[in-house]
Length: 484
View (tube, rainbow, N blue to C red):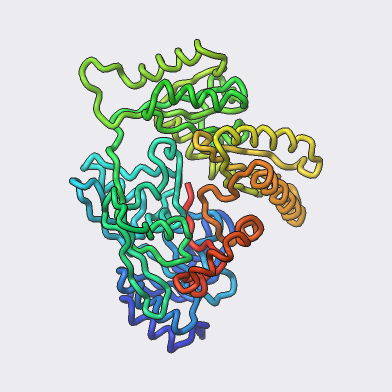
């Protein structure tokens, strides 16, 4: 007979805080999806507890703190750094926030108060009839709690910014003996009456407390959108091309997403629809998906947005040798190309991924440097570089794919060598970030300790009483994480 490692007394006590749907035991098939990470690896939770309210989260955390039970919060479980599943020790209780599903909109204030478990797609579906949107765009479908915990950026950060810029208020439960519930922010866009404490929790990966609800600033839903694939004449001109696009289209420029040929080939797979974006199937070495948008409907006499995009690009073509080509196509299909890259790359071999960011003018220099050096490194001869990302804001998703034919032991050796090389070059040489928007988590916790941890020791010690790190599952920064 299965016996819970949690202990009968603790299990009975915790079950009292939730209804019959709020508990999933470790010996059930239902727990599998909570233990499975989005990219790689699995967890082994003691059990899953699913509260419905901030009050229930408070009771659970208070009990676990006093009983010395580690808790791992899980939001949408779409993260890529193993931050939202329990570890393999089977000593951690997983708290799923998926039942925190409230949505309350205020059209006059143009805000929504949203439960941490609400999916991004569900929120935007609820806002559709109001012609509003929460504009953080990612290819997965994360939950709001995880997006705030990792300060998600996404493909349209160039225009709308990250989650931090849209969070006007948070409800947070601290992992202390009382399970203290705190409300930070009042839905005000302007408030200089004191320290903005909610910023401490945004992007902290759940270390200081569990976010259960958020008040979010919304934007008008775009009414006109147009996209194009740009082929720059080389890496060196991309910063100048970006500046030219910004001068030509102003804040109508919504996205500027870079995609390498190797990433596109894997992202398209065998889809003839996606391949049709490129004449005769010829994919350039590097392609940029650019988008412009307007938040209002076209008025009489105004130039059509696609025509505006065409005229603007003609001007850029004539001003300098920035563009080798520009390819127009179906708007939805062009974005399908971009959003299909992550899963396409992952499916073609053993993946060694990096989520990096740089100053805008340094990002393309880094890519060009890595490509050149990779060609010279014999140890990486069985590795293909597939990179893409938010080149308009300096973000680079650098993915190395090791051939399936390589033995597993050798794959791991190559992976570790790649990590040492890439992180050193990105952080030390190019002064970039080793985690642009995926959070920290166990996958790159060693890198955090190497490049950041020692710098934050005194700062972290100063918040020792506030920090829930001793009680949440990963005490070294990075439990919950969402990805695009």
